[in-house]
Length: 137
Image (cartoon, rainbow, N blue to C red; front, side):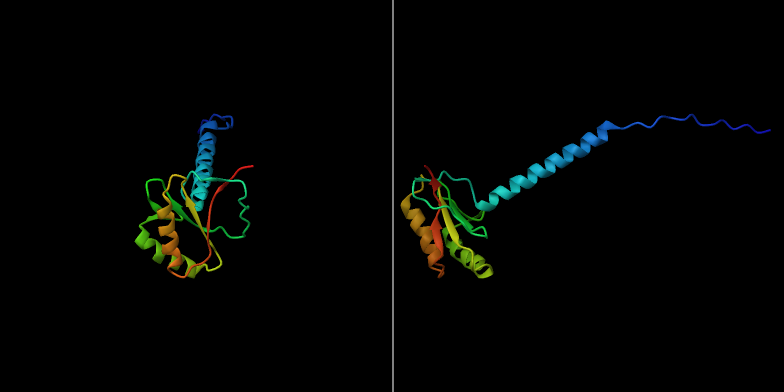
């Protein structure tokens, strides 16, 4: 008679290492997603203080024109020259005409650079331009 050996029954185990890998992947995924949401409001600038600044209430986030202390300009995080800014602002305005433009200038930026940015935007016929400030109480 033939005799076959029965395989040894192994106990079921919960493997913790793959579960840790999945949890780390989820953590990294959520961190990267949250970091990509923040730059949608423009580049980090040190805004001037204001005690009378109203709170911006709008259902759609605005187009943010950022001016850095070194003179660089960006429209919604995309670095541009002053000459390119007007055309880019007009193209963005044509896609979403109800959104306004907010100029977020570092407090160290020279006033003429802010005026140049306003001229570039308003030169394209866009009138919905405002400034960002940091509200202090």
